[in-house]
Length: 230
Ligand code: ARG
Image (cartoon, rainbow, N blue to C red; front, side):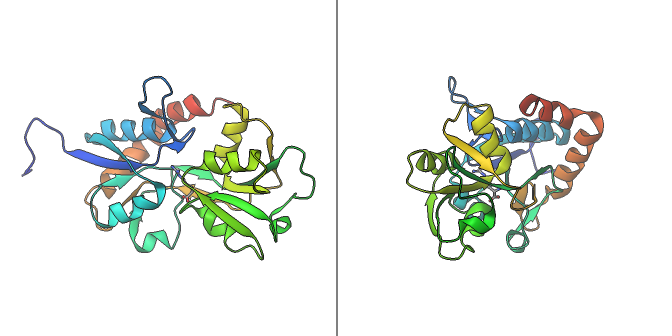
């Protein structure tokens, strides 16, 4: 017996940090949330018969909000890590990503992660890029509220490199017309995005089942092609 109203599906509050195209961003015209994660989460909501209500938060505020049950879930290009999995639950992985190094177009001395030693690096606060940059010997790491601010710092010549999710940096350059920067070297890491939930969330199975269904019935593919058509 459900304690919810009979005719209203239960509503899921889903956190996201919407400055991360093409995964989550605000439509320039309408201001509405859009992107791969947003569309995927809406499809999951339909498949699982859950009403999705998005809540925007700074990226480093998302895990605390899950821990305090202020939100029911988060979809935010969030990498599944062992450290995070100690405090939140993750769905099955839904996207393969990894960190990439971006430098100014005319830079020739940085070609790999090893070349970042002693350099000035910009990252988005609370991200795996920030974590990875913090391990570099002698580097000066500056944190920004968004990946695009970190990239702007690089364009302005205030830092030597940005460590950020590869698909996001490449999208900024190739699709959003960001000028003056390039990606160098191999991906630094292999990472998988997952939907994060509070530990012991009652919604974990619903979300995993819905993701599985969408992967089988072509729904996932449709979302993928909307944002990564090639
Ligand atoms: N994948 C990286 C991480 O989990 C960066 C995610 C940033 N997401 C965002 N919506 N700003 O740390």
